[in-house]
Image (cartoon, rainbow, N blue to C red; front, top):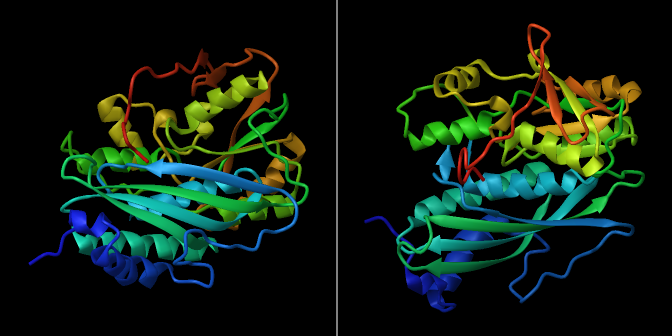
Length: 334
């Protein structure tokens, strides 16, 4: 008989202890993991970056990962985008009554494996069990802290006219993967999420040059939303060469069938980087040597025209404003 989560697993008693020891301690054990009320950590000198993020993806498993892998990648990448080296993570789980314990073990294993690849420690956490129907299977919140690399200073407000815009690979795969996993449209396509930790990629960029203005991961809303956010924060215009934007054939096919714009499909393993033109080729070269960014390329530049707007040059040379989507395109992609 399949073992499942019961309300007793969240009561703080014997069953809670058993769950922590049999799953979380087994996968997350490290010199920093504590049974006390808070972890005591070595904090590096200098500036630190801190971030927290909640993950409620449905379905919780998808081609290329699951909610556990996603929860580590999301927070690791947010910290890395501030020019920081992620060090420690905490996680809080809200699990639905009746959730299979074997699936929880798979999720914890994916978290541990991804954290190891990123070089971070899971140091503390919390587990709550909600009644049947109060949550959708499992929700995870992760919080992370990292050391800002000396000389790094990035922000969405720092984009400048003349900057080149770089993406680290083909876009839209995560959003497309989740769409297919729901099977609402009965489409069969070989597409895998790009979900990956990117802190080593950012470190490689900052080893090549500290002259980087913006680093942002294109999660909810995809690359298009990120570009509009940065254009607004920095009060600059953005010019894109549509033909230069990398999109996998499978994603192109799905977007063509459903009338979707790849620029607005979520990524979970792609960065958007703004840097001075004379640094751009150096950055692309560094990225191409790293796993998960072999397809890095320049897709546009920052201008002092059309401030706050994103303008796209099409294959025939026409210029058009990238329209902003309304409503919810793909709910719960992260």
